[in-house]
Image 1 (cartoon, protein in one colour):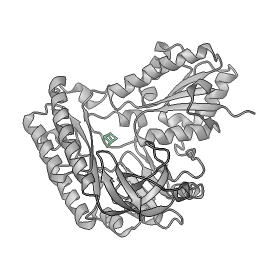
Image 2: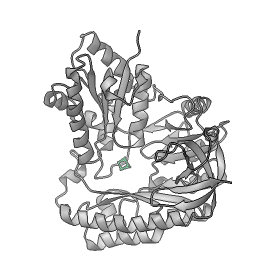
Image 3: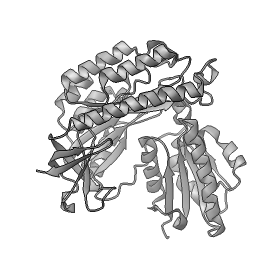
Length: 434
Ligand code: SF4
């Protein structure tokens, strides 16, 4: 039987990128970057902010036009928006052929068969009651240098602003043998660096093992040269985890640790379960153990009744820690979350102004951090051809900074090389092989 070609437009986090690759594998399909030639188009959606959610819905409308030339084209929606709105999407968009929640991915071959055989019109799969959510591994192109491995699905925290526990369900941790098998398989296909992903990845536990034990086992995988993990939850940063990061030479010098606000009052309203003193203490312990650790964080502006004083505390934190990168957003009310029921929220224009101030300051800090790299020798894992210039190659430092390198031939792809940093820009570095 001829393999179908699938175009997937992915919104949101790395978990969604991973799920898109699982969909391709589940269908045993050929991935394509060209929607005009696809047999199946899937919009894999993110519901974390209202904007992303609207973007995904309008993408479906856009692709519907392709059905005029190709009546056999199937258009589906997967991911968190699909889970959240379910049947309503089919009602609102008569041209949408199926709806699939994040836990339904193993069901996708059946869904496509049903549509093709006209057995079931416009299926919907949003059940949370799924036996093995890790059944399907992701599609990984042979020779691709970096890959992802999911070690956890869902989330047991109850942050007041967050839709994830509703759309992805409660936390399910993947057994270690499955994690090791998938990692070994990706390494065999050419991966040199793997990022282990979960909503609160460092709360992973299974069969009496904790996250720090898992890190120790992962470093034993032959051929795996670099390990990253995301997203960590501040309260679950333990001293044993820090020791494991310090003593494990494969773990990259990089940590993404969302703080969300610098004010204890707002952290309480958000139900984040830690104080800013706890957060700062963990950062200190991490920096003592790994002095050149690069840090990134997430900040939500305008949650609850955040006032000028709360916002100033967030700015103070940004200035104190000097994160390498900050992902900052205006709060957006999500249906069904505790945040939706809260009485007051910051007016949009005030939140926009605060966001602008924070982003401008962070831009300066990020550039300063990049400039500090000038003249340094960095270990760079070469991933492929540079996006800016197809004659150059690009890779990443252990601290996750993108480095473009001139005059390097493609035999370097997949290798870690020493690179001297000769230029630093806002979003990337330029280096030369030494
Ligand atoms: S930890 Fe909080 S913000 Fe992160 S996914 Fe869970 S509920 Fe959402």
